[in-house]
Amino acid sequence: MKHTLDIVPLKSWIDTGDKPLIIAGPCSAETEEQVVSTAHLLANTGKVNVLRAGIWKPRTRPGEFEGIGSIGLEWLKRAKKETGLLTSTEVATAKHVEEALAAGIDILWVGARSTANPFTVQEIADALQGVDVPVFVKNPVNPDLSLWIGALERINRAGIKKLGAIHRGFSSFEKTAFRNEPMWDLAVQLKSACPELPIINDPSHICGNRELIPYIAQKAMDMDQQGLIVESHIDPSVAWTDAKQQVTPAALADLLDHLSVRHPESNNPIFDDKLAELRQQIDKLDDAILKQIGDRMKIAEKIGEYKRDNNVTILQVSRWDEIVEKRVQLAKALSLSADFATKYLELLHNESIRKQNEVMNAKSVAEA
Ligand code: PEP
Ligand code: MN
Image (cartoon, rainbow, N blue to C red; front, side, top):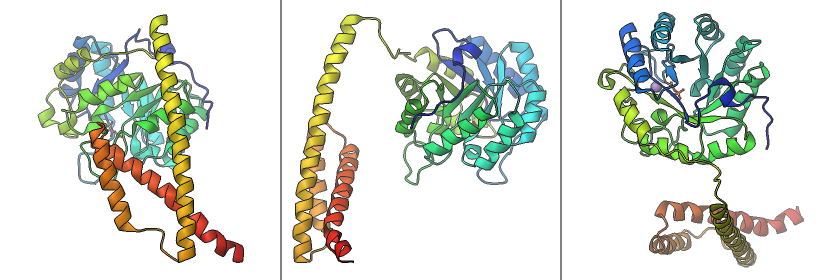
């Protein structure tokens, strides 16, 4: 599903040369001193383009710090005046948009909880009608690509052409090392649906802890994302929100120093030839794998017919357990991860069951 968003290239609204766009700053504006001194430290690194700070904080549970409110806009204004950094904040209502624009905030973003709600996004879009301000849209909390694209479309239809997406990861039932599962394939799908749309990464909200941020930031660069939004606080240990995932400006500078920024294309014909050859090999293997899966399904259909004629259930748990155990061991011996092998087998099994179901119920459908 291709989408044509009517947007202008990122380089035309923020020129970062051949470097990624870096937005950094505290999760929340807490005090004037905290905002301004963090901004100075960030500006002094020479590596940050835009200062971020949450003024209105959407919290999952009430009773936590819900943002300092409008007064914080004045602190951002002062930080901009003293450091020259552009400023950005999250907006979640029409009133936030009006106040942020009145305060001269340079870039707005729509938060993950808002993106999940089309009513909220439409309210924000209506408030943006006729305004020329850059807007980033975070992915929704739930892994739903259409909601993300829908929010981008609503903002775009309000006339916002300086538009980008922020990949901040998705809530998942299963608890993993990440606060929000990156689910990179959703960001990749957004990129193929809207190739011209800049996507930046929010490793802070993906990780939920400082330690993993460099790994995710590098991965974002390797996935050809155009920048990072990172939470940075002058003293993370006393931060009022998201303390565990914030880094000091010095740690941020160190992280950015160690980032390898790669390019989607090379200018080297020998490299290109070699790459084309390797890709051909991959294509050939992919074709062969699919063909074999097709053959496997044909056998599954035969089994289905056999089970149907003998009145046996589709699922035999013991057989399934045996398949998984043996194949996961083989996968490990082939240096494939157990997680990958299990997921792959599950997909295969589901498709087999679907096929067998078709075969086993075809008769009753015909009879009906
Ligand atoms: C934030 O950027 O501080 C924030 C609340 O993020 P998200 O909307 O991604 O949860
Ligand atoms: Mn935060």
